[in-house]
Length: 249
Image (tube, rainbow, N blue to C red):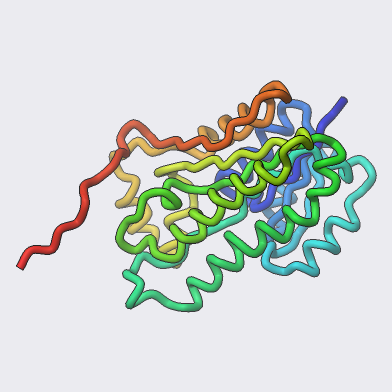
Protein backbone atom coordinates (compact mmCIF):
# COMPACT_ATOMS: atom_id res chain seq x y z
CA UNK A 1 0.00 0.00 0.00
CA UNK A 2 1.35 3.41 -0.95
CA UNK A 3 2.13 5.66 1.99
CA UNK A 4 1.86 9.43 2.14
CA UNK A 5 4.28 11.88 3.74
CA UNK A 6 3.54 15.51 4.48
CA UNK A 7 6.74 17.55 4.47
CA UNK A 8 6.73 21.17 5.58
CA UNK A 9 9.28 23.63 4.22
CA UNK A 10 9.73 21.62 1.03
CA UNK A 11 10.84 24.54 -1.14
CA UNK A 12 14.56 24.09 -0.41
CA UNK A 13 17.18 22.32 1.67
CA UNK A 14 16.22 19.29 3.74
CA UNK A 15 12.55 19.54 2.80
CA UNK A 16 13.04 19.55 -0.96
CA UNK A 17 15.61 16.74 -0.74
CA UNK A 18 13.27 14.69 1.45
CA UNK A 19 10.38 15.22 -0.97
CA UNK A 20 12.55 13.83 -3.76
CA UNK A 21 13.78 10.91 -1.66
CA UNK A 22 10.30 9.77 -0.66
CA UNK A 23 8.67 10.35 -4.04
CA UNK A 24 11.44 8.46 -5.84
CA UNK A 25 10.91 5.59 -3.39
CA UNK A 26 7.24 5.32 -4.33
CA UNK A 27 5.65 7.42 -1.60
CA UNK A 28 3.08 10.12 -2.19
CA UNK A 29 4.22 13.49 -0.88
CA UNK A 30 2.32 16.56 0.24
CA UNK A 31 4.92 19.31 -0.10
CA UNK A 32 4.21 22.58 1.70
CA UNK A 33 5.93 25.94 1.59
CA UNK A 34 5.54 29.62 0.75
CA UNK A 35 7.22 29.69 -2.66
CA UNK A 36 4.74 28.27 -5.15
CA UNK A 37 7.19 28.25 -8.05
CA UNK A 38 9.63 26.02 -6.19
CA UNK A 39 6.92 23.60 -5.16
CA UNK A 40 5.65 23.47 -8.73
CA UNK A 41 9.17 22.60 -9.86
CA UNK A 42 8.98 19.51 -7.63
CA UNK A 43 5.72 18.51 -9.29
CA UNK A 44 7.25 19.04 -12.73
CA UNK A 45 10.25 16.93 -11.73
CA UNK A 46 8.53 14.13 -9.84
CA UNK A 47 5.01 14.04 -11.24
CA UNK A 48 1.58 15.20 -10.06
CA UNK A 49 0.68 11.60 -9.22
CA UNK A 50 3.45 11.59 -6.60
CA UNK A 51 3.55 15.17 -5.32
CA UNK A 52 0.74 17.47 -4.29
CA UNK A 53 1.68 21.01 -3.33
CA UNK A 54 0.07 23.07 -0.58
CA UNK A 55 1.19 26.69 -0.70
CA UNK A 56 0.98 28.45 2.65
CA UNK A 57 3.12 30.04 5.35
CA UNK A 58 3.30 27.61 8.26
CA UNK A 59 2.85 30.54 10.65
CA UNK A 60 -0.63 31.15 9.21
CA UNK A 61 -2.79 28.69 11.14
CA UNK A 62 -5.95 29.42 9.15
CA UNK A 63 -4.14 28.90 5.85
CA UNK A 64 -2.69 25.63 7.15
CA UNK A 65 -6.12 24.29 8.06
CA UNK A 66 -7.58 25.42 4.73
CA UNK A 67 -4.81 23.70 2.79
CA UNK A 68 -5.24 20.43 4.68
CA UNK A 69 -9.02 20.59 4.33
CA UNK A 70 -8.64 20.80 0.56
CA UNK A 71 -6.22 17.91 0.05
CA UNK A 72 -7.36 15.61 -2.78
CA UNK A 73 -8.48 12.09 -1.92
CA UNK A 74 -5.23 10.46 -3.00
CA UNK A 75 -3.23 12.61 -0.57
CA UNK A 76 -5.54 12.94 2.44
CA UNK A 77 -4.35 9.97 4.51
CA UNK A 78 -1.08 11.13 6.04
CA UNK A 79 1.18 8.35 7.34
CA UNK A 80 4.22 10.52 8.08
CA UNK A 81 4.56 14.13 9.18
CA UNK A 82 7.99 15.65 8.64
CA UNK A 83 8.12 18.94 10.55
CA UNK A 84 10.99 20.44 8.61
CA UNK A 85 9.96 24.08 8.20
CA UNK A 86 12.15 26.26 10.36
CA UNK A 87 14.83 28.90 10.29
CA UNK A 88 17.47 30.82 12.18
CA UNK A 89 17.64 34.60 11.95
CA UNK A 90 20.57 36.70 13.06
CA UNK A 91 23.96 35.91 14.54
CA UNK A 92 24.26 38.73 17.06
CA UNK A 93 24.36 38.26 20.84
CA UNK A 94 21.05 38.50 22.65
CA UNK A 95 21.59 42.09 23.74
CA UNK A 96 21.98 43.19 20.12
CA UNK A 97 19.51 40.81 18.47
CA UNK A 98 16.29 41.96 16.82
CA UNK A 99 13.18 41.01 18.77
CA UNK A 100 11.38 40.63 15.44
CA UNK A 101 13.86 37.89 14.49
CA UNK A 102 13.22 36.11 17.78
CA UNK A 103 9.46 36.27 17.25
CA UNK A 104 9.73 34.91 13.70
CA UNK A 105 11.84 31.97 14.88
CA UNK A 106 9.45 31.15 17.72
CA UNK A 107 6.39 31.45 15.48
CA UNK A 108 7.95 29.22 12.81
CA UNK A 109 10.02 26.70 14.77
CA UNK A 110 7.64 26.26 17.70
CA UNK A 111 4.09 27.52 17.18
CA UNK A 112 3.72 26.40 13.57
CA UNK A 113 5.20 22.99 14.39
CA UNK A 114 2.79 22.34 17.25
CA UNK A 115 -0.19 23.63 15.27
CA UNK A 116 0.23 21.25 12.35
CA UNK A 117 1.19 18.38 14.63
CA UNK A 118 -1.97 18.86 16.68
CA UNK A 119 -4.05 18.99 13.50
CA UNK A 120 -2.66 15.74 12.10
CA UNK A 121 -2.41 13.71 15.32
CA UNK A 122 -5.85 12.02 15.08
CA UNK A 123 -5.12 10.67 11.62
CA UNK A 124 -1.58 9.65 12.52
CA UNK A 125 -2.92 7.71 15.50
CA UNK A 126 -5.57 6.05 13.37
CA UNK A 127 -2.96 4.98 10.80
CA UNK A 128 -0.22 4.19 13.35
CA UNK A 129 1.98 6.66 11.53
CA UNK A 130 5.10 8.60 12.42
CA UNK A 131 6.29 12.11 13.22
CA UNK A 132 9.81 13.25 12.39
CA UNK A 133 10.74 16.64 13.78
CA UNK A 134 13.82 18.41 12.45
CA UNK A 135 15.65 19.80 15.44
CA UNK A 136 19.27 20.87 15.63
CA UNK A 137 22.44 20.33 17.62
CA UNK A 138 21.78 23.93 18.69
CA UNK A 139 19.03 22.55 20.92
CA UNK A 140 21.68 20.74 22.98
CA UNK A 141 24.86 22.82 22.68
CA UNK A 142 24.84 26.60 23.15
CA UNK A 143 27.05 28.90 21.12
CA UNK A 144 27.39 32.69 20.83
CA UNK A 145 24.54 34.11 18.78
CA UNK A 146 22.44 30.95 19.11
CA UNK A 147 20.12 32.45 21.75
CA UNK A 148 16.47 32.19 20.60
CA UNK A 149 17.22 29.74 17.78
CA UNK A 150 18.80 27.29 20.20
CA UNK A 151 15.85 27.78 22.53
CA UNK A 152 13.36 26.86 19.81
CA UNK A 153 15.27 23.71 18.94
CA UNK A 154 15.51 22.73 22.60
CA UNK A 155 11.72 22.97 22.59
CA UNK A 156 11.55 20.68 19.55
CA UNK A 157 13.67 18.10 21.37
CA UNK A 158 11.58 18.15 24.53
CA UNK A 159 8.28 18.30 22.62
CA UNK A 160 9.34 15.23 20.66
CA UNK A 161 10.08 13.32 23.85
CA UNK A 162 6.77 14.46 25.32
CA UNK A 163 4.91 13.24 22.24
CA UNK A 164 6.61 9.86 22.58
CA UNK A 165 5.38 9.63 26.15
CA UNK A 166 1.81 10.73 25.38
CA UNK A 167 1.53 8.51 22.30
CA UNK A 168 2.63 5.43 24.22
CA UNK A 169 0.53 2.48 23.12
CA UNK A 170 -0.80 4.11 19.94
CA UNK A 171 1.85 2.72 17.61
CA UNK A 172 2.83 6.23 16.49
CA UNK A 173 6.58 6.73 16.28
CA UNK A 174 8.26 10.06 17.05
CA UNK A 175 11.82 11.08 16.22
CA UNK A 176 13.82 14.25 16.64
CA UNK A 177 16.56 14.46 14.00
CA UNK A 178 19.22 16.97 15.06
CA UNK A 179 21.62 17.99 12.27
CA UNK A 180 24.83 19.91 12.73
CA UNK A 181 26.53 21.83 9.94
CA UNK A 182 24.84 21.28 6.59
CA UNK A 183 25.24 23.48 3.54
CA UNK A 184 21.81 24.65 2.42
CA UNK A 185 20.18 28.10 2.29
CA UNK A 186 20.20 28.08 6.11
CA UNK A 187 23.06 30.53 6.63
CA UNK A 188 21.95 32.70 3.73
CA UNK A 189 18.59 33.11 5.45
CA UNK A 190 20.19 33.57 8.86
CA UNK A 191 22.40 36.41 7.63
CA UNK A 192 19.57 38.07 5.70
CA UNK A 193 21.08 37.24 2.33
CA UNK A 194 24.83 37.57 2.96
CA UNK A 195 26.24 35.11 0.43
CA UNK A 196 29.83 35.89 1.40
CA UNK A 197 29.13 34.97 5.03
CA UNK A 198 27.53 31.72 3.94
CA UNK A 199 30.42 30.85 1.64
CA UNK A 200 32.95 31.63 4.39
CA UNK A 201 31.20 29.41 6.93
CA UNK A 202 31.20 26.32 4.73
CA UNK A 203 34.51 26.86 2.93
CA UNK A 204 36.79 23.86 3.37
CA UNK A 205 34.53 22.33 6.04
CA UNK A 206 33.10 19.46 3.98
CA UNK A 207 29.67 19.97 5.57
CA UNK A 208 26.71 17.67 5.28
CA UNK A 209 24.29 18.12 2.38
CA UNK A 210 20.52 18.29 2.21
CA UNK A 211 20.59 14.84 0.64
CA UNK A 212 22.54 13.45 3.61
CA UNK A 213 19.77 14.53 5.98
CA UNK A 214 17.00 13.41 3.62
CA UNK A 215 18.54 9.95 3.66
CA UNK A 216 18.41 9.89 7.46
CA UNK A 217 14.78 11.01 7.43
CA UNK A 218 13.94 8.22 5.00
CA UNK A 219 15.90 5.68 7.06
CA UNK A 220 14.00 6.54 10.23
CA UNK A 221 10.64 6.56 8.45
CA UNK A 222 11.13 3.14 6.89
CA UNK A 223 12.33 1.22 9.94
CA UNK A 224 10.18 -1.74 11.00
CA UNK A 225 7.11 -0.45 12.88
CA UNK A 226 8.24 -1.92 16.22
CA UNK A 227 11.38 0.26 16.26
CA UNK A 228 11.59 3.93 17.27
CA UNK A 229 14.62 6.21 17.01
CA UNK A 230 13.98 8.73 19.78
CA UNK A 231 16.71 11.17 18.84
CA UNK A 232 19.27 11.16 16.04
CA UNK A 233 22.14 13.66 16.31
CA UNK A 234 24.32 13.88 13.22
CA UNK A 235 27.30 16.06 12.32
CA UNK A 236 29.94 16.07 9.61
CA UNK A 237 33.21 14.52 10.74
CA UNK A 238 34.82 17.96 10.56
CA UNK A 239 32.50 19.38 13.23
CA UNK A 240 32.78 18.54 16.92
CA UNK A 241 32.58 20.24 20.32
CA UNK A 242 34.44 23.35 21.42
CA UNK A 243 35.60 24.35 24.88
CA UNK A 244 33.88 26.61 27.37
CA UNK A 245 34.33 30.36 27.03
CA UNK A 246 36.48 32.01 29.66
CA UNK A 247 36.77 35.78 30.01
CA UNK A 248 40.06 36.88 31.51
CA UNK A 249 40.76 40.27 33.10
